[in-house]
Amino acid sequence: MKELNQQEYSEYIFKDFQDNFPEFLDCYRFETDELIVEYPSHNESLTLWISTQDCELTVGFDQTGQCVWHTHMSLFGAYEPEDELREAVKFIKGIFAGTQKIVSNSKNEIYVTDTPEEIDETENEVEIRTWNDF
Image (cartoon, rainbow, N blue to C red; front, side, top):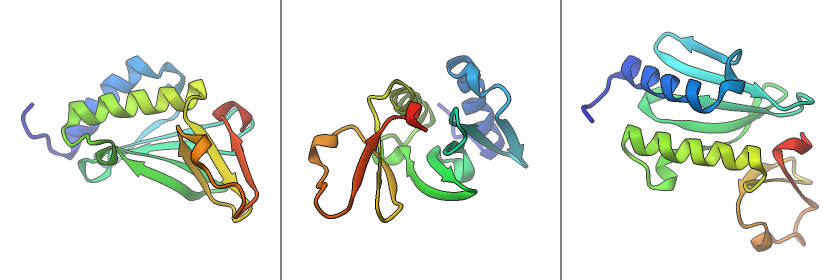
């Protein structure tokens, strides 16, 4: 794929997300040439957000208007737009399906894991939840 500028990158991601995530229909916006998605959980206690800022696909969570956790698709070994897109779709679908667990603890930290059995629950009061719990 040819190198994309910010506008082209955002449009590329937007086009695919429209097909993969129809539930985001009312949650898209563009800030200049960056795509932003803010998709609230069913009881609106957590918001899944996605950004294309700096031609990098970022997925995270907001809670009460504050970013509480995020990751970049490069951490999944994805450095090209089509690879980032593939990994993001797989990751987000995993969050919605409950295979990616959402961990919160007594320090008000939130993060995602697909290996909850490796979490040390003795340090902080840990709660392992799924997207549907929010």
